[in-house]
Length: 103
Image (cartoon, rainbow, N blue to C red; front, side, top):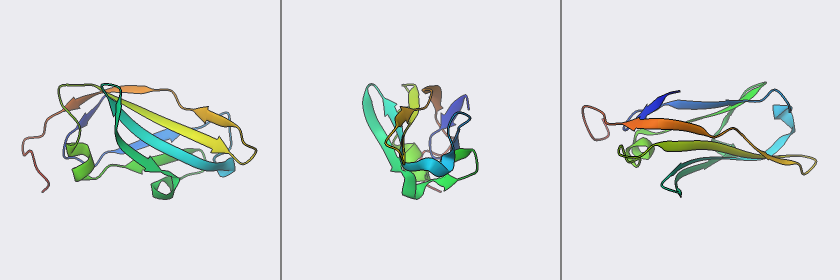
C-alpha cells in the first residue's frame, strides 16, 4: 500500500512468515502521525487469516488522518508463549478525497 485516501475504507494486511498466526493472543494495529497514535485497533477487530491479520479502516477513522503528514502503520503482537514482536513499519502517504466527509 503506497497511500491511504482520507474518507475511504482501506484494508491493511500484515503477513507473517516467521510465526504462526494461530499462536497470536494479542495484537494492536496503530496508525501514527507526527509521533502520536491517531488510530488504534486490537485483535478483536481484526480479520484473522492463516498467515495474516488485517484490519479495515472506517470512513470516520481515515478522515482523522492529516493529509499533510505521512502515516506509519504498525502491528504489535504477542504469542501464547509470551513472545512479543512488531511488524515492519509501513510509511504511507495520506491523500485527500474529492468529498471530504462520510458518504
